[in-house]
Image 1 (spheres, rainbow, N blue to C red):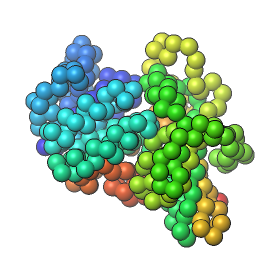
Image 2: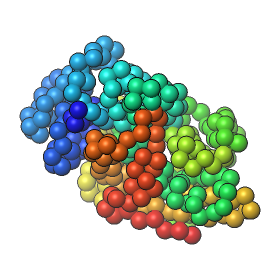
Image 3: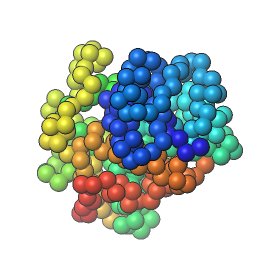
Image 4: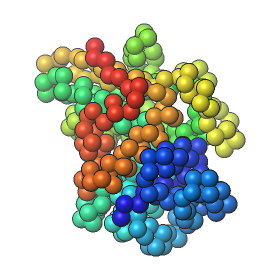
Length: 325
């Protein structure tokens, strides 16, 4: 069961992940719904491929697979089918989503997965690996942390898949964690955060960290924000967007996030993580996470990257630094 299945491998980020996994020498099988695209990529990479519909997912589709890494978004449309299939087949499930409802789903299915000996580990890409590890890092800088605020900076253009996922996040409504409970916060207001280049106005948004941050740090009050710079978030028909930014654009726009924690005594501390562009970071982190799970780094049930791999995991990707303030 050392085979890694990459579902959605012909997409923008999935293709980069498949190429990276193959370069690392992992036993890879790519999968998806479109035979022609899969056949072409499988031939290029010299790997096997499987074609199947999520609506009629047969048990043999996951035969011999140890880890399934899902790149097919919007993930609210794919995660439940694949999570349930993985639980039934005894396959660990990973994905790269930021969509909060997928984390809430994994949380609900956690006990069922644990009973089957299966790990559900959503968010092994830019979100939530850096923010999850950063949250755990900054939480250790105060005694009895009570409140956590996390803000992501999005610079450069979005991929078609990311834009559609953000639409799902917006559609989920504004939420925050208050006294340990996830609650609707329709009147949440923007805040300024400093990513290292001066204060930037950040809008509230319900990322998956509202679930992972709680599980990783046990901080009872959590709020999420995002600063979208320039023309990063597109308008109009999102399905007509290009696959994603090219390598030169990715190199121009590094990724940053800030986490702020308030201790019970009122102490406020802040840490910033900076790394390569999120689209470059995601396939590297996701494949490394899958490699580690295949090697035995796993905890059955619903889990978070920082709990499974440690708070230093985010910094194992070259070019990643954390600065404390």
